[in-house]
Length: 377
Image 1: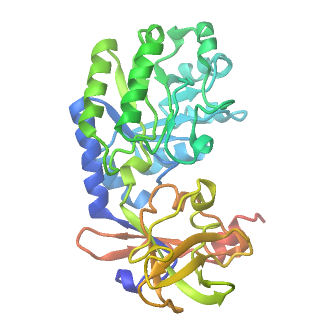
Image 2 (image 1 turned 90 degrees about the horizontal axis):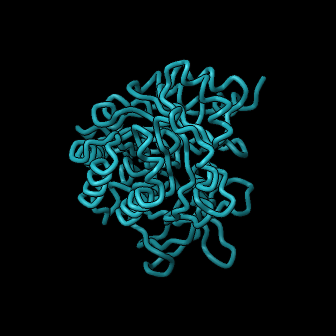
Image 3 (image 1 turned 60 degrees about the vertical axis):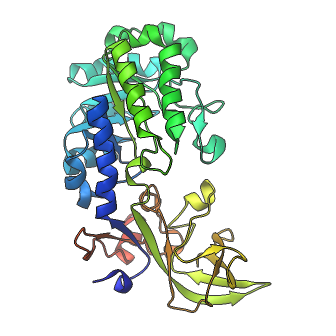
């Protein structure tokens, strides 16, 4: 199978590019003497966990099922944080996760003794009041007004730090080094008394390590200075930062329409396959296309669902589009495929990897069973 013959829609991960990104992470990990975890909320593809395991310290989960996936398919350390835990969930997590984080002083008092008795390290998430989310405004800013994420600084005096191992903050989204270094320095300045009572500090995710312009040496220097000052371990949890620019979503034109302009209907959909196009929102780049009007033929690209807003965007191409033409969306490995859905019975996009020797392997064949299984008995 080749990329040209791969059935669409399909997400395709390029292993050579993934390895290059992981080597960047390994450089930070080794030079700064810190831990780096894969945030499975952003990327969860068990077929490549064996490769990632060689470069990372483990996984971090946003709930019980992600934690179970990390334990079963990745191995190494499993960290888990949720803004709220359902009855019995912490007890079950104690069987698969070695590091459990709580969202508030009240949660810490309620569940901390249970996790500690099971041998887990205990983390407390703190809202640091530092905003540097570069995508989506308040939608992706964990420190936006009335955020549900983390204990507020005003209540930290209530914390018995003797029961806390990890001070946890997460304030970034697709941030470059200015954001990462700024967060590290902000935490050092504002929370020194608490930092002197814990053994590790987790600076969360949003560090866009492999994005163009990210200054790795600045991050390394900031972590080293922080560790020297407070004598603590440092943990990072990048998700998108590990897989940025490592793969594409391959789609096909299935029909053309006209209504005050040319419209191309695809077998890929913003509503079902690229929800962040609508939620963030953002406009994904396409191989061989530009913004409307820049090339000879302009089309509005849209999905085939009945959702009126299922519009990917307006693009221009050198030649007219026709049914069967392939459209390749760049940089679709972080968040897109883990958020897909089957609205309207639209088939899930399949998953594939392009190996380092160039051969293509299709990992899934989603069909009616995937749609039906989500609807219960």
